[in-house]
Image (cartoon, rainbow, N blue to C red):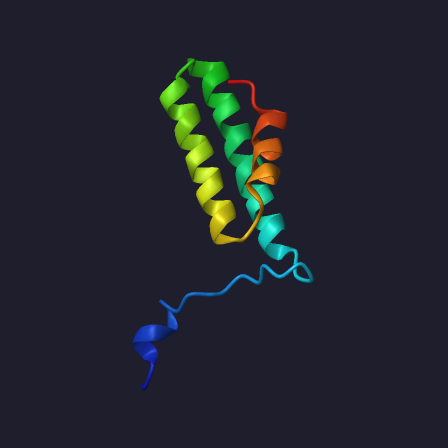
Length: 84
């Protein structure tokens, strides 16, 4: 069973070349989804403070950097739907 150990742990590479917008699409979905979920949490419990906002920003920027998406796009994705 050569390679059986690595089969489940192999990392998949996400294309981020402009001809392959999946990296951008994935980053946008993740960023907007995170913001939407945090809006609900803040609406229901009022738990989102400055530290959390900064962590959301850092997380979104890190994801975008890894997927080679410009930070300006991440800013618009986070700010457009954010209510916290």
